[in-house]
Each structure stands twice: as C-alpha cells, then as structure tokens.
Image 1 (cartoon, rainbow, N blue to C red):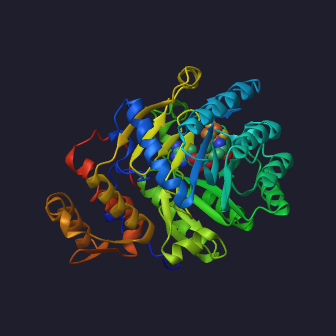
Image 2 (cartoon, rainbow, N blue to C red):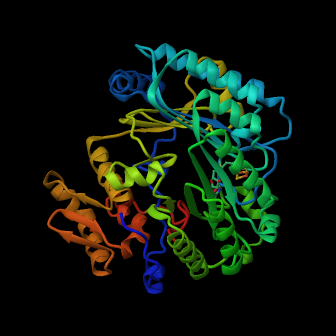
Length: 459
Ligand SMILES: C[S@@+](CC[C@H](N)C(=O)[O-])C[C@H]1O[C@@H](n2cnc3c(N)ncnc32)[C@H](O)[C@@H]1O
Ligand code: SF4
C-alpha cells in the first residue's frame, strides 16, 4: 500500500470500465445464491464449522437493527421506517430467541471475538434495550481477550448514554453516517443533519474513550458538485476521523424505492462522479490519509492502516475489517452469515423473520454452499481486494485460461495490472478499477451473462 497519488484517471478508461460489477463483499456474490436454502443442510454446515472455528479464534456476530425514524431517500440498506419505539422490545426478543436457537446448535460455549451492530440505525434503540440485548448474549459466551466491538451510529440520535453504555460493554469503534454536510443536498436526500451533530457525536465518542471513529461519506448524490463536495470533505476531515468510507452512490431504484423520490436529472453523471471521487482522493492524501482499497481511507494511527500494511487486511459483508474470523453469524432481519463453507441471508421482511423465529426455526432464506472451486476463486478475489496482488495456482490452469486470462490481458494492456507468469499485481492506476480486476476471477459472472441491472455501475 502506498500513499495516494492524486493523479487523474484517464476518462477513456473510466468510460470503458464503467460496466456493472459487484463490490465483492462475498464470492460468489448474492445474486448467484439460491433463492431458498435447505434448513437442515444449513444447520449441519453451521454445526460442523462452529466446531472448527470456535476453537481457532472465536466467532464474529453481526446484529442487524433495522429501524430508522425517517427515510433517507438514497438509502440502499434494509431498513424499516417508524417513529414508534414500541417496536424495540419485540425485535430484541426475536434476536434473543434466534441467538438461543444457535446456542442449542453449538457443541461448546461460543467465544465471541467481534460484534458489529449494523442497520438501519442501531442508535434508534434505547441504551437500556441495547444493554439488555448485548448483556444477554455476552452472558452466554466467552469474550475473546482481543475482542473488537463496533457500531453504526446516526449522528442525529447517538447520545452520550448510548456511547457510555456500549463503551462499558466493550465497544471501542463507532462509525457515523455523515454522507454529505451540504444543506441543499441534505434536503433533497431527506437527511437534515447539522454538522454540529456530527461534531458533537465525534467529540463525545473520543471523550468517552472510543479509539476509532469512522465517517461514511457518499459521492454521486443528487445536487453534489465539486464545490459542495469540497466543503463536505474539508469539514469532515477537520474532525480527523480515523477512517473514512467514501462510497460511490449506488442507484438501484428497482430495489430501493426511496430513490424514486428524487429526480434522476439531479444526479451527477459518470464524469462528474469521477471528479468528486478524485477530489476526495486528493484531499484525503493531502491531509494524511492512506488509501486502503475500494473506497476506504485511514489515518496511519488506525488499526485498518496497520493491518493493510502488514498484509492481513480482510474483507467481508461489512467491508474491510482488521481481522479474519472463520465464522460470521448474522442475527436479525436480512442479516448475512458466513460459515466459511456456506453463506446464508435471513428473511428480508420483519414479519417473515418473526414468523420463522417464533416457529423455532433459523430465519435463513437464501444462501449458497461453496464448492472447492468457489473457495479458491474467493481467495484470489480477497487477495486482490485486500493486498493488490495474487498468485494463481496451476491446478486451475484450464479455468483460468478460459475465463480469467483473456480479461487479465485486456486489463494489462490498459496498464491496470502487471502479469508475470501466474502472478498478478494491481498497478497504481488499477487501484481505482479493483472491482473490474476482481471480476476477471468471478467465474459465475464470466460464465453467465447477467442482466445489466443486477448490479449498479462500477465507477
Ligand atoms: C446502515 S447505514 C449507516 C448507519 C445509520 N443508519 C446512518 O445512516 O447514519 C450504512 C451506510 O451505507 C451507506 N449507504 C446507504 N445507502 C447507500 C447507497 N445507495 N449508496 C452508497 N452508500 C449507501 C451510507 O453511507 C450509510 O452510512
Ligand atoms: S441511511 Fe441510515 S438512517 Fe438513513 S434510511 Fe438508511 S439506514 Fe436509515
């Protein structure tokens, strides 16, 4: 990993590679999973893998807390909009039932290495309810010495009580959804969030002792232009977040209906979006941030930077992480689990989730059992997205020659990677096209021509 160069990226290449490709938080990617997963097969896989992984390094828990008080129209997450906080109790009851169900499948007490509270808005829930949820889970487990607990907080409703309660339970990382600080952009995305709220939430977290504060920012939102983006970036950088996720806005109005509420003519086009991204890259570089990979930047003091330097960065459904546990168990509506050999996603509607849990069944709906081939190609994709290089195995020569090499050659000709025998290295220019490079190893994608609308465009 190198300090970012602010060199401009060739617009010809941008247009050429602006094709639908996934973000590779999993491989195979979600559209290739089976629409329904056999519950007994899933349960058996979970039990087998738990026996192996729990004793190695413990497990990770992802808990999806879906409620938000108002709809941000750009949002692509699984959320439920309500101002009725009466929903908290029933939801926490369901998660605890789901956890109890998995506890019964475990042959041993779970060792919890990571907990991540995602959403929706975890800070929609009262501190008392979060404490009840987490303490019940923790009391049935062993907490790993090097545990890492993190949450996604909304700057508008993260209170001192939330931060204190979670800190006492062991949380040290918080990620705030900042998105954009400009009042006009905020109005059109229906997210009125005065910068003072971001500042207050950040300073509170630091004062309490959180060691890593992340900001999510988005480029490509309606009404964004370089001047507005510059102000948002500089204001955000002035608070010195330890990490920044600078996401490209994913426009998928066919699945996220809120995105139909603004006029598509207000969206920056591909060239404008690229200028916004370049501006971000440049300002982060000028202010001491390092490019970790696919949209993530970190200060040198942050663990994400340290693991990226030591070559141990990992990527999963939550994006880049500092640690790789062999098993991720997702609890809650739409939560995704990864046992190492299988993926599964829970029911996506709250009612569907409650029905399954109340019937005493795992809530998994769609999923995928990985073949040896999938696992090998997943590793190539992980190597490229986390370390910028990979070495192909001669055992896959036939597959590589048919599906991967022709793509790699094109990318090499465009200066995005270098090929030396079976070794692939991403060049500085290729860093922006990492999703396209990974897609050369996506055998599912290469084999099947999927509808152009399945994924949003790459840049
Ligand atoms: C669950 S939300 C974060 C927590 C909290 N709900 C909030 O909004 O502050 C996760 C992140 O996904 C990102 N996100 C949501 N919809 C997106 C979209 N359509 N394109 C790109 N990023 C998106 C946002 O940056 C958001 O902060
Ligand atoms: S961005 Fe966050 S607060 Fe807004 S609707 Fe999505 S999950 Fe809820």
